Length: 296
Image 1 (cartoon, rainbow, N blue to C red):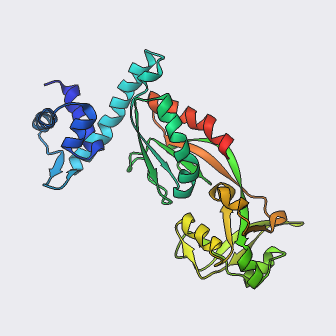
Image 2 (cartoon, rainbow, N blue to C red; image 1 turned 120 degrees about the vertical axis):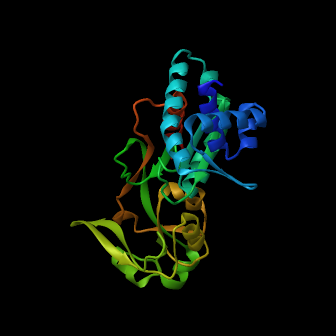
């Protein structure tokens, strides 16, 4: 059996999550996929998958084999793509990660245009406020808001977004509007990050940068939760402006302390550092690099 077919069948099973799903993705029969995997395992002398009636998962040897072969197949795809300029040649699966709120507001609306331009793509959009490990989670492209600390990644800044401090009109009617950052110590400040009892919010004044330690009765690792808390009148939140979108036009939402806020968070495209970047990753990166700034 063709060794390349064995490897591509193996990768299809890993990324589709099962034999039947891999068959649907590749257009082959499930028996053909099973035969290819069986031949590969016999040739290597190891079991690549743990099989049960409910799931198919990689063995340790299977994970190592996937980590080694996936980049090789990507390089072959890239070599093929270089031989043609047709957008139809940009095909295959691409896994994109973004923070939940930012992804919902700014990435998801761009996906139809991306798929219209490159109909051969299969997009897996992972939305989570947890920063994904790009290698372990097989992320091809991440869109990050804020500082990126990944030495084994390529980072391309495409835009910036300022911080804004906001609360609802009903909250300020009960507690008053802070006139200086120091007033926040007397307010209920909602904390993004989860588990923390306090946070240091950054500000700037006549004498330079400073921070104020704030506290509140609601913290969360979800920006959506903090946004909902602000809209419900629970307290004050500090956000990257891109996370609020239409809320800033809401008649019940008020920004405060604008003159004391100067920090800007980068919006960046991040992809794993490797010798050859697959053509589909390069094209998708270029798409978001040109499409995102106009939304932000």
